[in-house]
Image 1 (cartoon, one colour):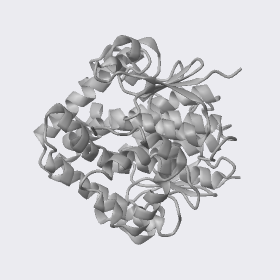
Image 2 (cartoon, rainbow over the protein chains, first blue to last red):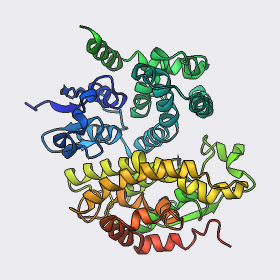
Image 3 (cartoon, chains in turn blue, orange):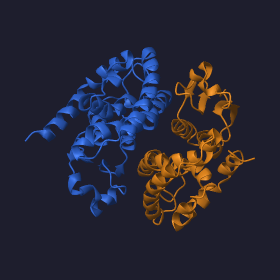
Image 4 (tube, chains in turn brown, green):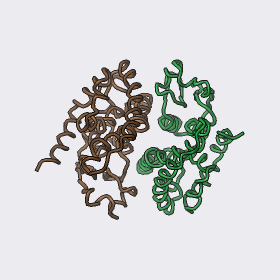
Length: 221
Length: 219
């Protein structure tokens, strides 16, 4: 019987959720070991040994220690191919490459402006950090241009890489969830017909609903 | 019969160079199809059908069309895994996983800090702007912190994912090549192990072929 894999990091972290969503889709048993980032757990020497940049998540299974959420997700898909959603990262090289290009687009084009907006609009106020209106405006414009491309694509295709939900769609869940549920700018996604339709579908997946539950439990007394 | 891989891009472009270097390392034949950036060919409908984000490069292999240079290199490195240099260490699960990690480090830690600096020195002047020192300084600070981690890593292994050259190292080549021509190059050369690593990877024949065409901004 395989030992559960370990994921280190708080459930509220977007990058941690990316990995947890993937593990749930792949039906890979895991143990979430939360870190208290307010106390600096992620900067302690023991943690820096497995994540030298002092960020979350980190991942361990029987064979190896890894970091960077998208690397962990790719590893999980490739090393547990027969488990859970077998097509999450494609079942042949052409499908995999098509998914990979949209996973790269998420990492290079969607993530930077959406992360900046999540920080400015949802996190900064909670941390008593002053919001920067210039940064907000700049990133709204950037994100809008990216979502215009998505709007066209999702009018031609049910999901980003094709007819099936994939790792590329999954990778968008954490930041999009915060934008829609923790800021007043959610309509940047929901007001676009095709993007809105796509968001509705991907956020209704059982795996993502479980992640959201996990986040809510963190808040309850 | 295998079709010839087509790469749409420009020799001066960092992301085109990334893919060309990978193709050379794998000894894979390809045709570079020039895209006229100055006439904004990459923003016109025929090109947008290949890459809706209007960016170069684009790779075509038979019926497959790909955008995002790092998706292209991953595809090429895997399709031709038994040819040329072993860039993804597919015979060893641990090594392959570590290559994935450091590919993401370049993508998520290194690239966001180095790209704006290269932009300020090389692209801004073409648009009639002076380099923005504020942007440069802020990103130099970020990049220095990343390079501190690299320095520690490279003091215990020759390359980023271990004692073997991999796609993770290769992905750093194009932006660092231009960066080394800026006044900020010292943050690489003052770190002994990073410097040695840079000299090693940038002197590989596959990259030397590509860097000959990387004369952006030069007369």
